[in-house]
Length: 268
Image 1 (spheres, rainbow, N blue to C red):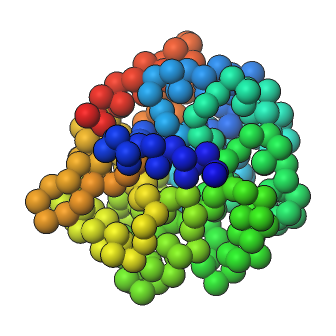
Image 2 (image 1 turned 45 degrees about the vertical axis):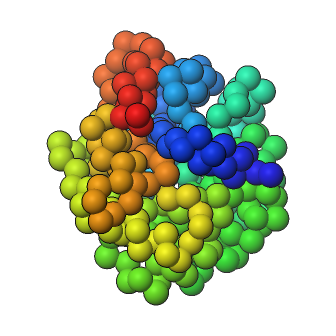
Image 3 (image 1 turned 120 degrees about the vertical axis):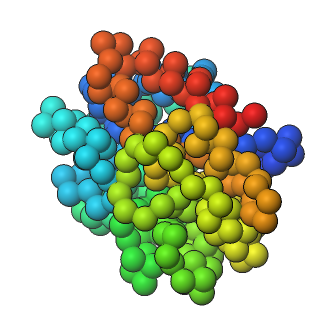
């Protein structure tokens, strides 16, 4: 069984939810990759998304885009991230997901990317910028390699299209909590999100993970709880808020662990 499937199965058996922090691979330095992953696992992360830096991110806001630019200017490559993740994998039980532009996948070749990602210890991929109609060429080699594959569903995605996207996914479905790009927010409106989660549950049995604008423990709690008339997600994804904290920290590893420990408080 794929590690992502096993993690969500075990969480559901305990009626528990997952915290899925996002970090930019190679940021603030390539040498921090392994220590950051270990710190996030100790702090309560169940699954960690590792963004592979890309020069033209589609959905990323200024915080993550700046982190990716910094990583790229310091010479971080997909291969460098694979090497660092591979070195750290043996000491980790957490799930690892590569958040990667389909342009990088096509540049390497989908089969070659899937093989390299699997060898490094990744358990799945998220392709945030691939249109559903063009996704299968990239997704099929990932599935064949045993990786979970997830696409994004936006708040305004029509119901019939959301169902098709969910059917193309494995591991979990990524539901955007709001429109636009990634970024921190002071407020998160959980009421309409709960309705979208409930609608998705009618067409897929896969876990649902919510991100975009989830910035603090209160937001995490709102995303995974079940307000009247709605339903909570299986996982909360926090990216920009964490990357921003790491960018301004003298010890990004310690700060990452401390912040995720606080975010995990929103799961209960």
